[in-house]
Amino acid sequence: MKPAPFDYIAPRTIEEACERLSEAGGGATVLAGGQTLMPLLALRMSQPFILIDINRIPKLKGVSRLEGGTRVGPIVRQNEVIADSTLAGALPVLITATRHVGHHQTRNRGTIGGSIALGEPAAELPATAVALGASVQVRSNRGSRRIAAEDLYLGPYATALEPDELITDIHFPDWPVGTIPLFHEVAMRPGDFALLGLTGSAVVADGRVSRIGLAWFGMGPAPLRARQAEAALTQQPIAKLDWRAAAELAVADTAPLDDQHATAEYRRTVARRVFESTVSAALVRRGA
Amino acid sequence: MSEHSIQVTINGKLHAATVEGRLTLSDFLRVKAGYTGVHVGCEHGVCGACTVIVDGQAVRSCLMLAVQADGASITTVEGLAADDGTLHPVQQALRDEHALQCGFCTPGVVMTLAALTSGAEKPSARSLLEALSGHVCRCTGYQGIRRAALKLAGESKGPTE
Image 1 (cartoon, one colour):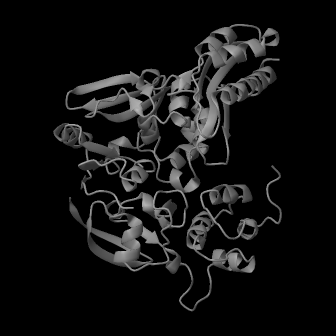
Image 2 (cartoon, one colour; image 1 turned 120 degrees about the vertical axis):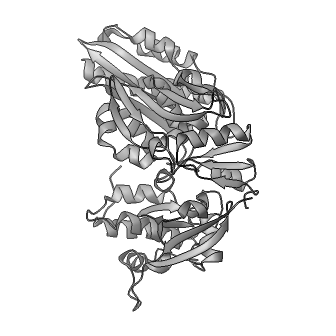
Image 3 (cartoon, each protein chain N blue to C red; image 1 turned 180 degrees about the vertical axis):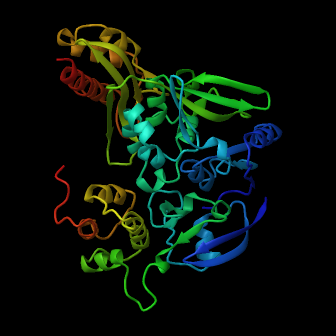
C-alpha cells in the first residue's frame, strides 16, 4: 500500500499556505499530524494532487491565554495538549478527552486542529470543542472568519470549512476555576474508535448548576450538543433533579445509527446510563 | 510528483537522500537507508510494528512522510544495543521475560518502551501499559511484554484497575 503520487509542499507562513490552497482550487489537502490522512493516502481513499504540510508554520503552534479564553494553535500535538499546564488549569476536560484520542504513538504526531478539522463523528475533540463553546478562526485568500464549533460540523467528515480555508486558531472560552469536567467514553478497547461518549463541563454554585455544556460523540452523524438536558439542569437545585428524565432529554438530542459494532438502540440505552452515572455522580458530589 | 533533498540523522549517522514526496518514513528507513529492523506490518497505523523514535518521541513511521523527517534525528531498533552487543535495558527486559516469539512486532514494542523510559524520571506502569495498547502482537498473548513493562517501571504488580 503506497500513496498515489502527489506534489508535496511545506510552506513557512500562513499566507503562503493560503495562497497554495487557493491556487489548487480544491485539489489540495492539508497535512497536519497525518494520523488519519496518512492511512487514507495509503489506502488511496484520498488522492490529492498537492499535499500542503502545515507542520513548519511557527504561527500555527503554541498555547496562550487571551482575554476571556485560551488560544490553541491547530498544530499543537495531542500529547502536547495533555502535558500543557495552562490547558490543565483552564480546561481540564480537554486533557481527559485528549487522553482518549488514538494511542500514545499517534498522539505524538496527531494534532488538536487536525482532529477538529476532520470531523470524525466518534471523535473526542470535536465534541469537546462543541460542548465547551469553542470556535475556530479560519483564513483564506478571501479573508478570515470565525466559526463556532457547533456550526462547524455538517455530517460525517463534512464541515463548514471551504476547500481554500485553513484553521489558524482554536479559541476556548474561559470556564471558572472549580469547573467540573464531565467525560465518559465507551469503547471496545483503549484506543479504539468510541462506540459513544459524553463530554463537557459544569459549574455549580449554591447547590445549583449555573453553567453547563454537554455534547455527545458517536451518537449521530456529527458531535451533538445535549441542549435540552443542559436547559433542564440549569439553575435547578441539584438535590431535587430528576436524573432519569434529564437522561431521557439528553438522549432525545441524538440520532445514533446502527453499525457493525452496536445498534442504535444499544447506543441509546448505554447513553442514558452514561449520562446518569457521569453527570449525576459528579454534580451530586459537588452540589450536595 | 515532487522530489525533495533531505538530511536525516539515523542512529547517530547523517544520511542525505533525494525522496519522492509520497515516500513514507518507514519505506525510507528500510529501503533507502537499510534499517530493516523497522518492520512494516499494516502500513496504515494500526499495528505499531514500524514504531521508531523521531526527535525523542515514539511515532509510527508509516504515518509520516520521509520528507517530513528532514532535519530530524531518528533512532531505530538497530541503534539501541551498545557496540559490544550489550543489550539496551528494554531489550534485556523483553529477553528476560520471554516477551517475544516470532519477533515481528518486537522492534516497535522496543522503541515505544525505549522512548518512554529514556527520561530521568521512571514512568509509571500504567503509562507504559497504556502505550503498549498501540501495538498488536499475535504470538505472545502480551503477558511477557506486560511483565517486561512492569519490570522497567520498577513495579512487580500492575495497576490495580
